[in-house]
Amino acid sequence: MAGQPNQKAEKDTSAAGTDNTEAVDFEIIELFFFAYRDFTSDPDVILEKRGFGRAHHRVLHFVDREPGMTVADLLDTLRITKQSLARVLKQLIDSGYIHQVAGPEDRRQRKLYTTKEGKTLARALAEPQSRRIAEAMAKTGPGARDLVKRFLAGMKNADDN
Image 1 (cartoon, rainbow, N blue to C red):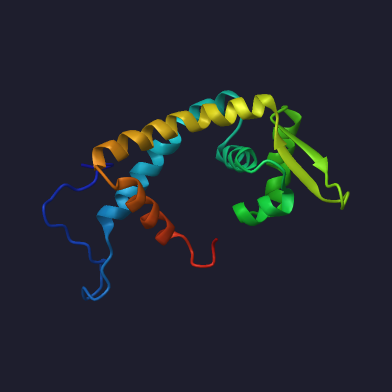
Image 2 (image 1 turned 90 degrees about the vertical axis):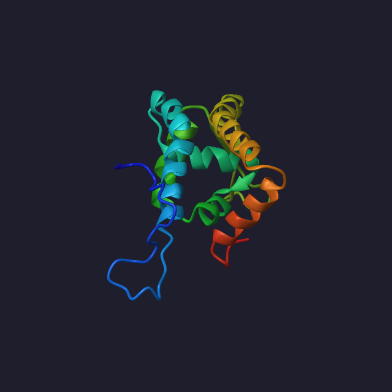
């Protein structure tokens, strides 16, 4: 069935055209696609009502989680271009969700903070995702949180902090 992970007991995980020396775990790849689709679906509805997208969500999330982070820090975290960030950040500032202030030592430095409305939106976006995570953890059993954290940390590039 299209769009659903294959439920066969034994699944061919080899890449097409290889001699089985290079295994590809298609089942896990598909589960990641489906999990990401569903994980982002609830916030997408909230964002769409405001004319925002996932880039706005990421910026709002990280600024809310680290008040006072600089634009340079945010660029490093998101690994996006200044041009991409500038458009999204301007929309969030103009809409009253993020406030920026000049740095105390270096006036060129811009520190970012969520406003009251920004905090409210960030929480509204995180709530259904947090609920989804909690439900999945409960189904997974004891020790799931630490295991999932180790797994996801292992998926990140080695040069990430």
